Image (cartoon, rainbow, N blue to C red; front, top):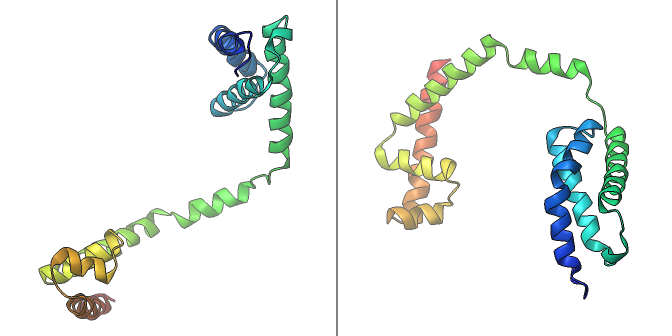
Length: 170
């Protein structure tokens, strides 16, 4: 805030002086979780920045707390409109991550890693660069100093080898 009367320095002074009491005020009002309290406090000072007549404010603490009450009420109203979570969703998540399913997933991951490790070195590197680093065939060819055609051929052979290796595991 750049007012002729030093409004910017006044706002800085208010921020230093009232930021902790403002956060405590919001915490006592139970204005949300700690992250919400930080966001609300920041919004209060942002709104104050937009106000270019700070010289008219006689009681800055009361003014800040009033802004905080308004912002907190706005946040509460917005959060009440959000779709609530249903408890049955949590039981579905727990069921999806059962210990048996986790063990099965780990076994499949081990089989996949073993199949990839069995690939020739260049094919293994091409697969890693493509799926791990997200590089295109062109970028892989440039990085490895081979042609795009070689990358495409090695990728096709790697797919075929992985398909055979993983099909034999079932």
